Length: 254
Ligand code: G
Ligand code: G
Ligand code: NA
Ligand code: MN
Image (tube, rainbow, N blue to C red; front, side, top):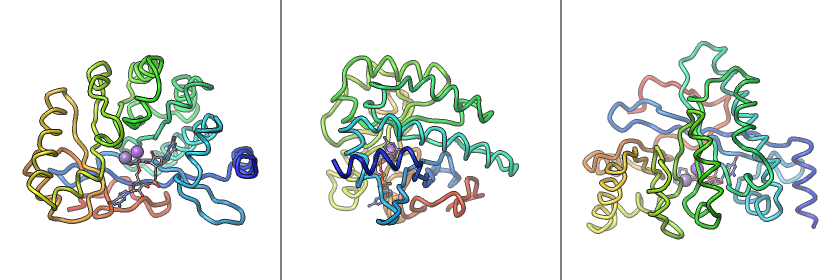
């Protein structure tokens, strides 16, 4: 339990910080939102990425405490950005349904927003397609409650793991984020383009905006534009950065 104890201690000491990666409107080239991605500033191991500790946090239930820290940090950051007088864009927070087992996430969100004087529309919630599948109906209820607060819901990593098309129907998601495997597939074959086009058609028919994840070059942007994709995210625009290097509002990325 060495790693688990280490993680528990880190949550108590709050050794975490959030990085931010922009999402960009493909037709205007302006930032539409920022995704908050947690990092662990480990005292001896340096800066750790989510894959090094989120799976353990989920297995052990420590994700509840970690998730609460993430929500608090994002609201505090939004309040800090607001003070600079910049026009704000929403920030999306990744949430694991495992957090719902131990904490009242809608209540946490409401309290953090109120405490920092941040409007609910400035926060969005991302849930991966596969995590929704591995949890039951109570997840839908919590997500619906969050959406009822005026917070947008995003499906993350769509197209990987199990397919949950029925869940797309029962939950009224606002945005569909297509996994970066499909963006990588755009350049490889005609089938890749056809598949992405079909996902976009489906999402639009269901009233969702579509984000292509993992955009790494200009050619992908051109294809995605022709397919009527709404937004892009990826290293071509920016990797996740600490707040000190992040500009929520840039006039134009391209
Ligand atoms: O930053 P990176 O690409 O390594 O993030 C990998 C994954 O970790 C993301 O896709 C996201 O699902 C997950 N993740 C990042 N930050 C958080 C967080 O604050 N809470 C939860 N539950 N998951 C996160
Ligand atoms: O699970 P989620 O999609 O939220 O995780 C996002 C992860 O994807 C982050 O860890 C981030 O570092 C990574 N990522 C973001 N943009 C790109 C990209 O353009 N290419 C690749 N390979 N990874 C990316
Ligand atoms: Na995400
Ligand atoms: Mn994703």
